[in-house]
Image (cartoon, rainbow over all chains, first blue to last red; front, side, top):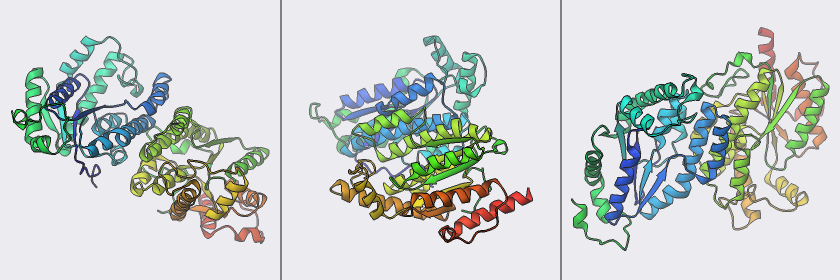
Length: 240
Length: 263
């Protein structure tokens, strides 16, 4: 059975995936700025950011009410809201939509939480198939170093404390992220991810991303998608 | 789908639930809007308590987790059909895991005002994929019995007009606009809901009851049927009321009896 619904929209959907600290958010933000500078109409959507669901997610997290199943369901509700209200209309209009995390995040995370693999994959079958999915491949210790060095407080669910892996937050986070990493690695080929070596420099990774974007979507970025009127509409620059 | 043993899951089991610990009874009352489900449940609760059973009742959008969020989303101006389906599924999941299962574990009779079937029917009526929503809902427990209070759309229209006197936005499916005005949208949407529910009746072993009968008559049928969940059936009484109960009903009861005796 097809994993996602067909995506015949005029716009293009580009998503990034990877564990916390893989640097994917930095990269998708650089990519969308670059696309904008090329005159492409770009929209951005982030995992777990629907205003409709926010209060519920907040309540659930604050009071630690989630089970693996309801955690999975509320994130799919959040995703559905962004998809129905924002992503699909924008794709229809011809925008390039950049998504920081997509259904794959649930495929990895929810399965680690103990939800059935088949069930969670079916859950997201209403999603539009991305045109490009980047996976930021990084060794666990590198990602942990970035996260643990940068912030002091890892939250309960972020650390996977609900799984009872360890009573120590940092240790739980380490184990949880390690298992998510395994899930990502296991689905890489099946999902057709473009794998980016996330240990390289930020500039290197960005160059690689832009190269793949031009290779895969170059033609439609020049002529197919919605372009802003302000920017110079010379197609030569984009071919770089 | 073959009728399963009571208190199994429709699909893969929920993580961390041992169904052999669930000693209570799970009874679902399904049926369209304004068909009188609430009244029936209130009467059943009193009656069951008089019989010495502890009763817990639950219903859609009543979960501590998602109830408020759903109410708020319904007050806003955008609530997409897939989003709505999944928000209700979240609500159901929270009540199933945090209310229904603990109550069953404690030996309660759980009366649920609607179950996954309304959720599924609403999704199907809005054009969502049947297989998709069936699988999403498959983490639900199979109830001991599902009663389906069935009415035709014309009965529902007269109940709404004579009762509340106005069509409700959501009960009319106005979010999808099945018609140019509330009445025509109500008729088309409710027709689709009834069709979707009818389509599930056999597969999910509904005990279908004619909701146009008097509330008292329906209550009597429900009580008689539920009584049999608790003990050896009394000698069959040949009353006309009994003929209203469908074949599916007697099949369910039969299999319950067989299981009881083999236990």
